[in-house]
Length: 269
Image 1 (tube, rainbow, N blue to C red):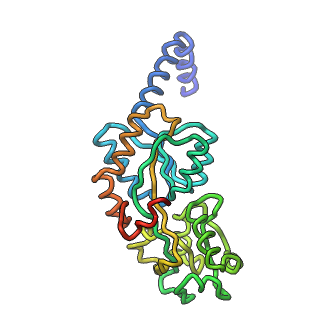
Image 2: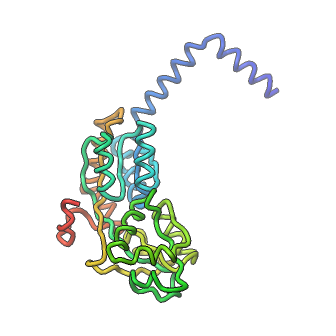
Image 3: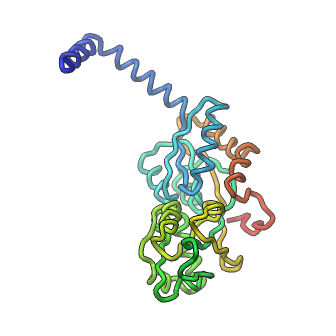
């Protein structure tokens, strides 16, 4: 009976193919007009999910997120030529995107502050970046080919002259900062470096601050893409993210908002 029903449906489609094609085109156009594709660094998932819901409630436009490492997203944007908004974990990726002619304009949202995390109880007695070079310490870091936190760790540890020693202790690299938090919370390694906002209230990990003279803090930006088929709506979404309502959501999830006097030295970063 199911087979017969399928045949009947096919016959109806064949008798009036133009009507089916037209309805599909209309549906595709409506979906395009009522949604935005946002490429977003995985570290901003919690606040951006909430902001997407608020934006849809107020503007009637749904937000479809593609969460991944900042560099992975950049590659996807370039290959597909599709999308409306880009929000990486650091402004460095905007410089690259601008050189490739991908972004139209951008705003600065908040700061990403790196911290060291260990499993609860800190079994390896980690207290500093130097301790990541200790014997019998297993470290998991972000992949510099995929995530902003990976590039940052590489630069931070190189500046301290300990990158190679830490690399000798690295047992795995994660494509997103969220993966790093998961690994450490499950006691898969002794330490990692992640964004502070992701672990501020996480009881499964121990957080160790990095001294200012050793740390590298990054600014989280957001921009519309030149590939957007709905540039006006994309611009409205960017403005919503940096509005008082959007900023309040970021603050709720532990982000330090831009601008902040403490990080004034990052103005050109």
